[in-house]
Image (cartoon, rainbow, N blue to C red):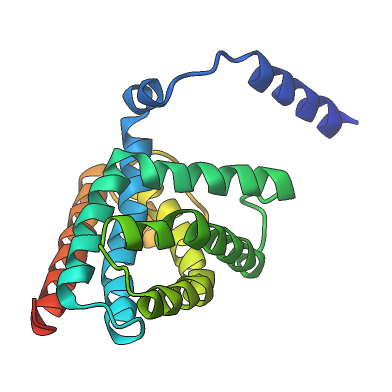
Length: 209
């Protein structure tokens, strides 16, 4: 009875809370926005660069253009949209911090597949300049299949970046990292970002960029 009452009160609070514009949310929660962006960009760029070149047949230049354009779009709001889709999905199916890691993997994988249809494939065409139907078909298969594990990775990455940037602590993150000082956590975030960019560029350079 108590839990139901709390749920009703929470729903009423959410319904009565004034809705904020996209830019107002960024202003009010800059670290949340930054965490949402880095959580997608950092694991995604090197992983997708590998798959797009080796499996889908993208040239190094096509892949580079897609990574640069995609990163810009992520900072412009696409990654925040991904986070919003994830939150909406989790709320609709009842996912919480108490959900087991195995079920989190399944749910984040489903969100990843949704992301591949809504975001990833259109970006290949409009930003990467990929118009070869065979490449697009291969990338569609790549995004659909690999976004299941990548969805889990992105979900974990989001919880990690929210933790190390001081947005919200997560029980999923090892205590060694989660209990570190704020300054050390910021170094983790910088290190992950530099490593991601460096690995992506070095790989594409080796592929003929």
